[in-house]
Image (cartoon, rainbow, N blue to C red; front, side):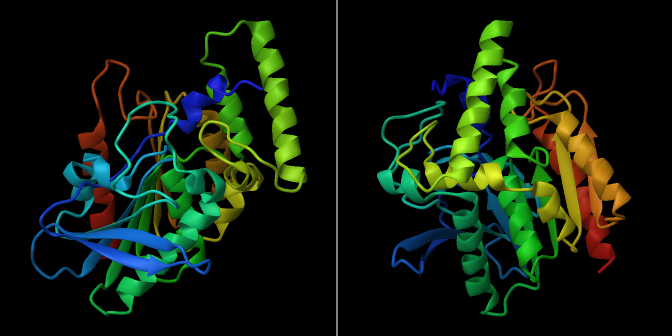
Length: 312
């Protein structure tokens, strides 16, 4: 099937960090013998008690080759050390390309990258740093797919002080994909055919044994895990403070599905979760007037974190 209609979703917001003179590499090993490459950056040059963990979106790029986190989202905690972790098979040698799809994605990335793999890698890197006893608080901040990973980490680890999930989507990934397809140029009949085709693909990838697949620069493991994930179930397992941020004009994930998920969480009395919607904001933080809202979002995150810190 054609993958073009999915590009709007899988070319998600990328949150990442560039090398600075204060950056150091952490080289850890996975259980299969491959290397986890992580970057630890001091923002102040002094010893920090806070670790800010930043988690980028779903595209095929090195986290080391984009300045957005380093220049902007790191300011959510400007005195904290910043940790980022590369995806499976990706290193800083991969040239940055801001495109929907590229033909030079590493084969290992396509085969092994997934939400589960990224979650395990981040947990291992954070535990490695926590063992040194330097960090009193750990704050997670992720965007798009990175927000889902942040939620999965917070649900499984006991070291998370607070976390922020930006434009993470609703309970089921398929709803977000179908939502994104509505904003393509296809006719109504073409949309119906494409949506039915994707539903068939989702059924196959979630019920069949692994098969060779490369769609939108993602392999079987990525699609299988993303399509089987119940994000509501993940969120119910989080007990630490969580801020969910969602743009009301998001064309990549469904704001309606997010609202439905928030309603269910309220019914479950998940009082540790704060929800903040920006009605005019799209997936990449751009408002309806074309003005980026990143600074406003960061300011609101800072205020929310300050409140959480005062409660602990």
